[in-house]
Length: 125
View 1: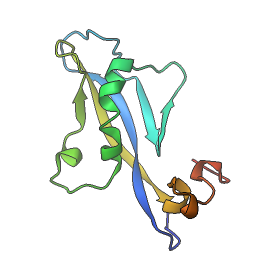
View 2: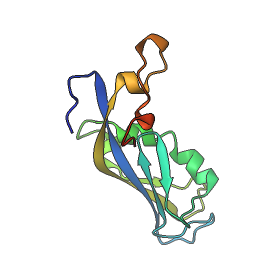
View 3: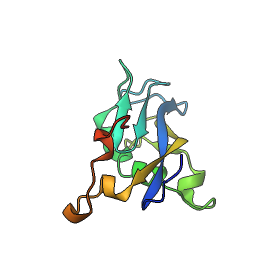
View 4: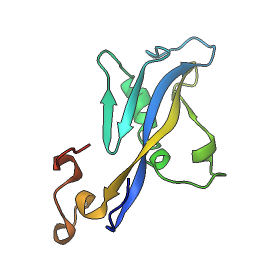
């Protein structure tokens, strides 16, 4: 997808999947359950769930995983995030998938620089 000459940025779509490390999970972690991150949206398929405590630990890391990083940056090389409960065997594997282009004018809050938000445009994400 081309940027059509506008100022903007690329973000990776992510898949966040529950995996177990061999220890019994303390929290509600079901291996294989997952959700996607598309732009700013968390997308859950019907019946998929995630612990809100685990989600609270994941959320600060997801925007960094969406962005381009150096091949040697740990955000690029490390794919699993542990459940915040140290006694829990649950982990979350974060996989980068396709990329999406976001125009600055479609995502900014600055009143003088705004266009129609990306999610309100035809075919919006």
